[in-house]
Length: 417
Image 1 (cartoon, rainbow, N blue to C red):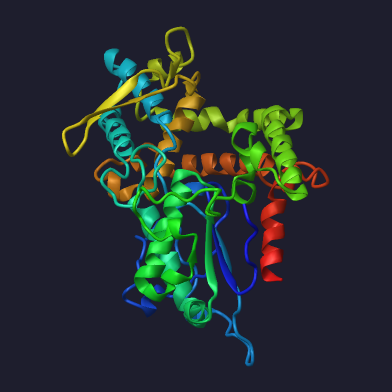
Image 2: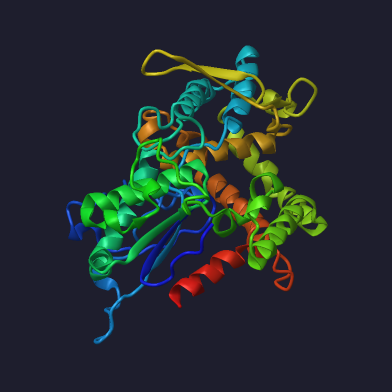
């Protein structure tokens, strides 16, 4: 791929698993902007917490006299999404069916079956008929996720009006790049589409052109410069998809760092031991009991993990589309429930995804299955897990979790220069 033109450009990057940083401001300043639904930040949804603006435009420090903005870069995670695949929901559904068969459900537990069916249906049809979603189903952005990126685009234009006005008038470019993962590409398209809706004159400035249309046939690629996995998918590079695209010494460094990171995540003994220690928290069994007791009868909970009482996401689930089609999603049987602790943790996974799926789930409600203190416990566990596997980890000198981002970091400095 050709290097970016680094003069007079605005760089917008969309990734499947990166942090989100954006220009936020008071969305009440402009009635035309898209406003994501208000999200309750006290529910311990961890990384599934829907994004909300944190500041009013009036609270930002003003540009000093004699200065003007000449460059901005946004690195954004994809918008709020559904479940990545049929796993926690189907495994719990198989366990629920067994409990139903044995008359081991409480009155609250009786409701769980319909809610699990609602969760699976919402995810199987996620994005169905929505312009800009290339392939409906698990892993897609929700309507909240779409509004998040539209809102970021609106607020960015409000925050830096002169910079964007100059883009089309002075031959500057607005460069869009993503990791290539469907929901990241779709997020970038919804963002870009909102820019063009608010400021049509930007059409000549946005590159590559493949991001200018929500049409599913407009597909950004490595070839047209719209996808850069070395910048934005560096945690998961592989020989099949990426080795042929190693062109520079920096590419080689990042590719090697990615393989090292993946080996660390899979095989590092310190990490394995730490995760095992976190999983063995003495409170885990107590919390699991607090989650499951209102749903299942005690005798059934005590059997979980015994012969005949381990469950997985095996089998399939079929729904009917709005057009009457029968659509079936098959599980892979890899996500297992071998203990009460596993079962309760799976309930949390479904609970945590609901914040970003409020429009799709309708009456389906998982809050009633998750005591708030239990949600706090699982959120803290996931945070700790991420800290060691993706964050500062054990030894900053190893830099295993940061070397993979060198390409993105160097590109930022190069663009600013």
